[in-house]
Image (tube, rainbow, N blue to C red):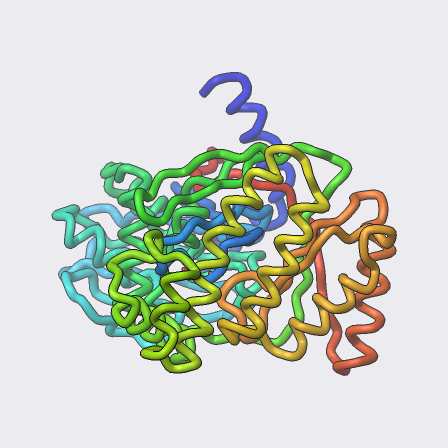
Length: 407
Ligand code: GLA
């Protein structure tokens, strides 16, 4: 490890010490020994580029300082069950899941354990021999909040399995393996953003991910005077409920009607020419996709220039498009964005929008760091008054992607 890497790693351990202590202790009490492996993977927040990772778009996410940590140990030959068995205990859910390790394309467990099972299946598909293992999972990524707690669990699992099997996957392949687990084992036809963010996250960097070429352009985000504030509406969303897959279907149909093979090639003029052959839902979806692809590239430029007002303006437009055209927002998210808008630049807010799949979950807000406490207070207070719900919030800098932890 280089000096810098070691310094980062020590700082990471210091910051996440509670999670580490908790997971190590629980491993001991579940399995009566110390874990031999500790793997961590972060959630993510998307700054802009929503619902276009599966529509040939660009997205601009960052990994957040919230992690899933897995403590694990492979079982030695003498104690290995035949067929080998995986055991995973979730501290949050106080639930132990167990499944036999074998090739399959569908889950045999119907709980959160599907995510672990799906990732194990991905390794087996690649001809990797996975031995019996015990594991314990701790997390401080809020679940069902649009911050990719499931991708964090998948990527942490894959990182742990890499260490157990000694089979290190190229990072993009690791992300794609986990995306496939989400498709097949959790039933969510998601794009690549969440898993790529959790693998490729870097300190002080946003990622401009081109979802066609799957290449990442780093966008530095170091300015201390601005912060990324994540506000949880505490309205839970559940992507597998079907709305996500429906939107995806509408977009595919719209693209066919417009007679193109990629959204990259579609201009607003093409949409207007095809308007007569589209349903109003398809038209709205297409309008969002085309304009959001443009906005995301513009926002990446504005971030590079530290033009915060411009970023904020694009974030607001993105929200309106998701609310009115793509229709994946909800009243609570709209209220959070509206309240941020009421504060405006003089109140320390550059821009705000829903983030992630939608229908609940979080907003992401670009704020002046000096005013962050007052902003939180204002939004929490008025949100509670208008909805009866207590919001929760935290700020995050762009964080380090998945890694193993020594000790
Ligand atoms: C979910 C999916 C992602 C992405 C977002 C919306 O988080 O998992 O692939 O489509 O929704 O941008």
